[in-house]
Amino acid sequence: MNNYSLQVHEVLKNNHFASAEVIAGNNGLNNIIKWVHVLEISNVEKLLKGNELILTTGVSIQNDTEKFLTFVEGLIKANCAGLCIEYGEYIQKVPDEVIELANHHEFPIIVFHEIVAFVEITQDLHSLIINQQYLLISKLEKYAQALSKETLYAQTPEHLLKMMYKYLKVQTLFKVKGQEPIFIPNLSKQNRQELLKVLEENSNSQNPNILSQPIHLFEHHYAEIILYSKEKGITEFESLILDRTATALGELLIRNLYVEERKGIEDAKWVEDWLDGKHSKEDIDHYIMSQWPDYIPRGCTTFVTFISENKRSQQVDKTYIKLFFKSILNQYGFHSIVAERNKYLIFILLNMRERDSMKERLEEAVKKIEQSELLMKQDAFEFKFAVGKLVAELHSISESYQSALDTLYISRKIRTSSNFYDDLHLFRLIYQLQKNTNLQEMVNEYLQPIIEFDAKYNGQLLETLEVYLQTNGSKQETAKRLFIVRQTLYHRIRKIESLIGEDFMNGEKRLAFEFMLLARKFIAKV
Image (cartoon, rainbow, N blue to C red; front, side):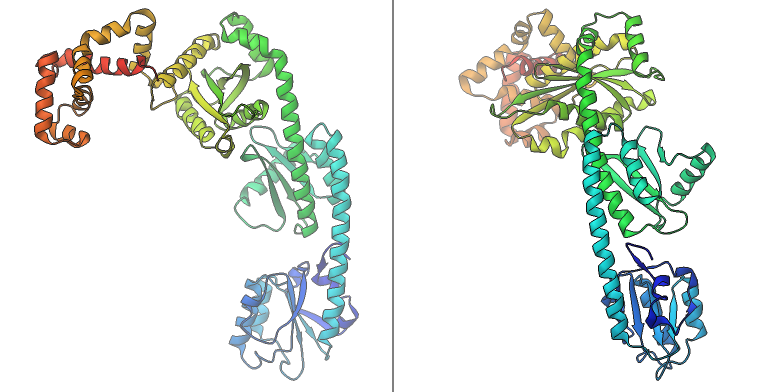
């Protein structure tokens, strides 16, 4: 007898089934029984939860083949384990149509050739089921305790997977995205391919012989454990063991990632020198090859995170933040090398997929990070992100890093629509001008008359000029945006013309005014 679940073929050995005969659905005798019900009504689907063994005298379906069919169809839809019918006053024979239906769905129909006591059957079988549930819980508790102890000392997932296999003796597959799957026990190359093909073909089906348990780390699907039993369906006990093993594996994976991240501190000085452009191309290539022997250059960049504290009493777990960000970036095809400087986390990103989609994937990754539940909960901290210049060569990372810092600086000075250096265009030019020229003097040369007029008369000419340029000189749209009547707008435009010239909307002069308006915002104190 199965120690943890009662199956249909096992109840046939019970004394009460001495006169019983299986007349249909022999292929379903391994169905699991979770409870036993006596039913004497034909409309049954809403009364059942699945895996029940049904006992009936057939009082409600006697002499009515259509009702009989409907009754059995309902049991099949409700995923019942099987049907037991007492031959006697109401039913002396099961119609051929019903037998054909049961065989088609592998649904066991058992008949009693003598009168039996349904009450005694239900009592006996319920006692068996309850005892088996107790055994299951007891065994499960022992496994959980042993698993907890093993998790403290285990170094690799294989250790826990082998422990689970020792309990279940069911073929196990462990998959981490981007890595080769692990088979417990190991299989030949041909058998591996065959198993992977079976799993792929059944990925969207409810195959009872396959059970998958995902492992979620950092808010996304990180790994997966799969049980595959060729001979029989996966049992409830096996499902519960799998669930606990997946939880333990998740804890082990998190611990190993933390250890790996801590070890990375040893390389921190080397990586910082790389960011500062102190390594030769040959040194960088050698370092990358030692980390990723199969790496093929497809472009790279830097992703910088600035973390500021809103509440001084709080501390952020930077190690967890790094692991979380790395996991998301890896999802979108980037290997990460991380450095930490004061309030900055710097990720050197190596593109592992096609070059053409690099920026698009990075945009999606940054968006996912920004909208993650983890960051939403960090109300004690503020995160600012910047992606540096996308470069082709590893030795250009220092250039990308500096451009990411420039992007952070620009984003602090003025609200931008993008975190990417490659999207800033005019602001990059303004920033360079600010560093190398007296930008304030240039702004004053173009805008001082209007600034002075607004300061003296509160004329709102500067805002009017900005909106007028943005709308390409549309008076209707400008008045609408400023919430003023057309006559007021005409008066302001005439005043602007008197201060900076009637030709301010012409060609290069217009471009210069648009540029200076942006520059003024940039150099203004935030």
